View (cartoon, helix red, strand yellow):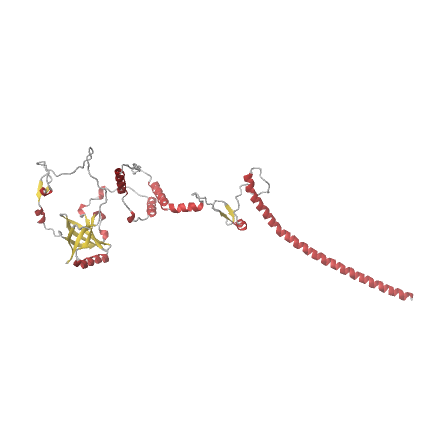
Length: 398
């Protein structure tokens, strides 16, 4: 970078030779004035009002115009004879917190570079002292024929000086302040806070001049003979609006712009076609498929397939519906399931009946066995009684 001023920083009795360089540059597209008739460039020439002749820079001097229009000539020698201790010196006056400097005072920024190897040590000393104190230095310096006020601070291990306006150069804002009778409600402040939180921060490094880019594109299109289409006009405001409604709309718009990507992902997962399915509270024994149908969890575990949605009557008899094929198809699975439930319900009863029959058979067998035993006992008794009677008869006859 080319230096625009050479001098020294006066830090008490310490003198630090430095070079001054512009820290900023202007990227605005510049235009030339041309004659609309023939496109010829228009130039400014210095013409004397007395003899109406063009004069050169060597023939040009300075003069101060008094209130009545009188011109008072001022020469370079007159200015050089004035006491200006900051002509080649940046004189540090003191150190203050950065919050004491009103941003309205800030003008052009300059980089201060150590001028020569011997200046490296005192330059580093001042830089580190500014860092540790967390303050800025207020100084005076002279540039382009006038004394100015400056502020020195540190950024990226470099001392930067900002030109400052003198305090009496700042206008009073009393004529700009709104009417003191204007009141703001707490609800409006809450919405303003919500909008600020939604918008969040901004990465300053990503900002750029859209208008300059548009001008460059216009120039390129003109050079190629292809004029750009005029941009659409936008509403610049100026209308009386409902403040609360505008704040609410702004908050919604900011949330949608920041959550657009997430919303798109959710829509794809929900339906696959960009539409979001309605969500309704359901019981624990049911779940909702991606297509929006309700499926019983027990049915899903038994069959591995979701149960079709029933559109007909709650109970089905299994007969074919006369309303059409669609209603028949929808009712068949329900009827099938109803039959399955009935069959399942009957199975325990069948097992119980089977168990009862076996018990009855066992009891019957036991009863039959007892009867047989009783018969045998009766037969034995009868046989014994008959034998005894025969023996008595024989004895009597004898």
